[in-house]
Every structure is written in structure tokens, then in C-alpha cells.
Image (cartoon, rainbow, N blue to C red; front, top):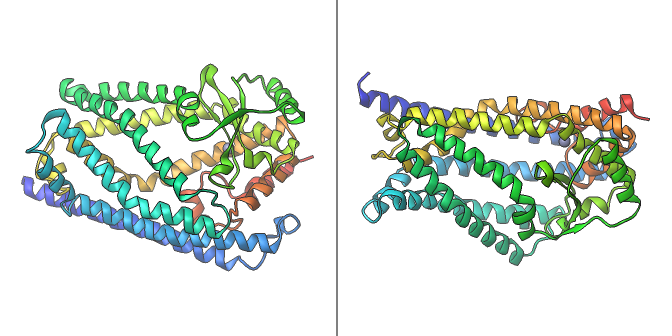
Length: 419
Ligand SMILES: [Zn+2]
């Protein structure tokens, strides 16, 4: 095939992928909205005794609001992607920066420009989500001041950490010959491990306060559970999640000897000690069943595959020209690749959601062994109610997007072993 034909074929393939992905996302979302509305007037039989009709309808309204707004977000994402690529956005940035800077400076300016544009496009969406949708349903606890303080801190950390990392990657790409992708992968993997290690102690405290869990029944129960499960951590902490939102959660951060268990204050205030113990047993299940390590290995394998693929594309003129960019260099290759790859990997969503849901069932089974399954069921029902999560998701939408199994399935499995 003559080069120009390869280029235009790739452009067509890209446009087709953008349109198909967008159409699939819109179709799944509209199915989800219809399904939730169709089941709005009756609490599913399994939950009839635990959840009121009012709470069920609140969850439906919240889900529908968020999903409708999500449609606008999908449209904006696709429009921005097309504007940056075939619409000439990246070509214009290149025309602006290339006479002014060269080498690593040019690369850094290009990458930060694209990130800045994406952030600016996203800003009104984040504002609307937080201060209109979350506020309307009673979840927002943030002031505008805190929102912009967070934004500023994220941007500052992004620049302080991001700039040296981008410079190192660009340098490796230019200096390491044909196997640059292998060196970039080693660097990237090491960097990620380092961030996971320092995040709980250095980065998270910039945004929230972490207080040690107070002595009392809760702490005694939790320490007994940790001992039962043979788990060592470097501390139990309570985070002031209520500063931003009334959604509750519990999580682990760090790894090795730097593991911390973090409870949102919003979770502690809503669940009984035995229920918190069951939630924590579920989280411990993720560790004990090696889900965390599996996820890290999978992530590293995927980034190796993507970097190898980029290594194959980086010298192909059709890759740049087919995406509307009339020049070739390492920074442009990186930008185009990471902008475009999600439209080609969208069909893999059900696979990653499936793996995640399988892990959730395993963690639930672990929790049922080491704590009371009935407590986990009660905790889940409270969390569903408090977070206004829908109990009646569209099954196909769920297959694509849900990292957790539908409530009814999870609870049905737990009830077979519940005391
Ligand atoms: Zn889980």
C-alpha cells in the first residue's frame, strides 16, 4: 500500500473506533438509566425488609442524575480527543512550541500543554458534579475554597513529581536505542513502586488528616481480627473523609512493612464495631488472596505490552500523520499514544471488570470465614443505602463498568454462609 493510503486508512480506523466506543458508551448508559427508572417504584424483594422505598428511590434518582451527566462527559471526551488529533490541536501546539524550544524542553512543554488543556476542559464538569449533583443529593461537604485548594495542590504535586519523570522518560526514549521501551518500563515500574511506598506517609497527609484509631472496643476487635488473620500493619488510622464528602469507605495503602489501614470517619460513624470488623475482614481478604500483588503484576505486564507497542509505532509516519500531526518525535509519540489507546482498549473493559468482581467474591468468602457474614451483609446494605448506590443496575452496563458485583448477587452468596 502507498504510504498516503496507509495514513488515511489509519485515520478512518481511528474515527471508526472513536465513534463505536462513544456509541457503545452512550448505549450502555441509556440502557442503565432506563433500567433504573423501570425498577424505581419497588424495592427488590431481597431488600424489601432492609431498605425503604424512599431510600431506594433516592438511589435511583442519584444514579439517573449521574448517568445523564455522564453522557455529556462522554461526548466532551470524544470531542476533545478529535479536536486534539485530527482537529489539529496537537499540530497547533507543535507549531507554537517547536520554534521556541527544542529537545527535552520542547517535549515537556508539549506534554504539559496537552495536560493543561484536558484539565481545563474537565474543570467545569468536576465543578458541576461536586457542587450541583453531589450537593443536590446531600453528599457534598466541600466549599469552593477547598475545591480550588485541592486543585492547586494536585497541580503543584503533578508538576514537581511529573516534570522530572517526564524528562527522564523522554531522555531514555532518545538515548537508549531500539530497546528504549524496555528501559522506560523498568524506570516506570520502579517509579510506581516508589510512589506506592511513599504515598501513605508523604502524599496523602497533604490532603487529609490521619489520626490513630482511638483505644476502645473497636480497636480491640480489629487487633484481634488482624492477629487471627496473621496480618501486620504499621498502623490503624482514621481519615477526615467527611471534610469532602459523606460517602464512607475503608482502605489499605502502602505495602511491605509500610501498610496502613485507613478508615473514613464517615464509615466509623455509621457502622457498628462488628460490621466494621467484617468490612475490614473483606479488605484483608484482598491481601490474603494476593489480589493486590496480582493487580500490580497485571498493571506492570500491561504497561510493558503498551510500551513495546509504542516502540513499534514510534518510527511509523502513518501513526503521526494518520492522527493529524505533521511531525515525528518522542514527545508527540507519547502524547498521541496515551490519548488514543483508550478507544482501542474499550472492548477489554468487561474482562477487567470481570477479574475485579471475581476478586470481590473471593474477599467476601474470606470475610465470611474470619468474621460474621451476617455483619458484612448488614454493613453492605448500610453502605448501599448511605452511598445511594442502585440495587438495580442494568446487567450489561454492570458487565462493562462495575468493579463490584451487583448487591443482590453479593448478598445472596453471603447469606448462604451467614449466621
Ligand atoms: Zn473489595
